[in-house]
Figure 1 (cartoon, rainbow, N blue to C red):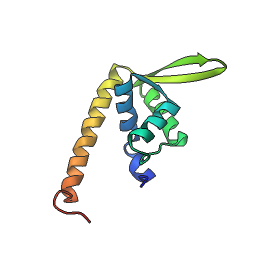
Figure 2: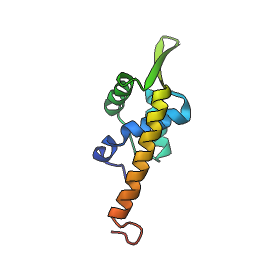
Figure 3: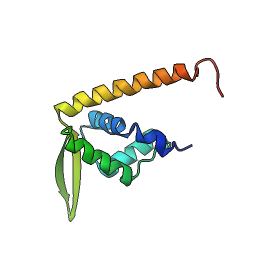
Figure 4: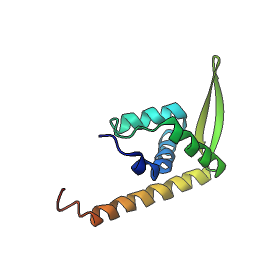
Length: 113
């Protein structure tokens, strides 16, 4: 089962921030493939969703970029600055709390649908 874009939309920024905390620096394609691998293909991030998120994080002053030239190709790496690391911690904690609240709301511990 691949999760809907509706579910992904609210969590994409948190996913990217957490990956950058864990991996120091990453480029776009690497992010999409890492998410796909870690979630066993349940979350597949498109370029159309990822790059606006990365650009938003950059505009918000949370990530820095670095260009790396590999032959004739240019790879743009993203990494978190101090503000980005703080925001990542905040967003991960917020999402974890939200998941706990949804578990209570849906009463998932005592029954399944």
